[in-house]
Image (tube, rainbow, N blue to C red):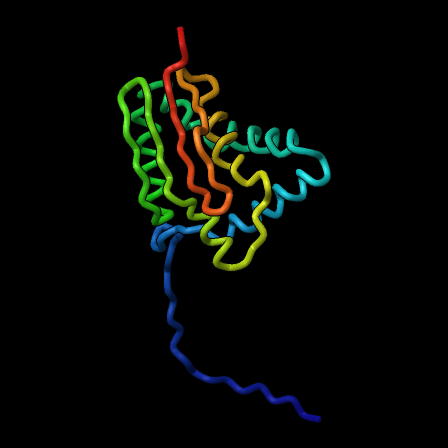
Length: 164
């Protein structure tokens, strides 16, 4: 058997791109996160889920926590507006320097997972509740989840200045 080497002269085209050239949207990440939360919950309990989310949020959102300490709820308002714009979800963000209300008519992550038939972890809502609480830890502000619908992810949050 003979192996012959054939050369073809073709022009080489190089495309240079960076991640910033593309809109970043991580919808399928939510399905993986939901599976991880379900695993932690089943194996280690609800506190393990919250501990994991606190540990993650404290590290990942440290710059946001610092910004809240420097600029107050304005920093949080800007962050929430940016995140929900990326997620292509309209929300209502209202408030003052001392309190902020976030009304989410449907969670884009829950909507995406339902659309694809992914299971949604019982504690998936903690990805908002616990994460927002952790972001507020070490600031003058706190947050409470006032409403939550597990079917749609609809939620209402109240961020407020901690009592002196």
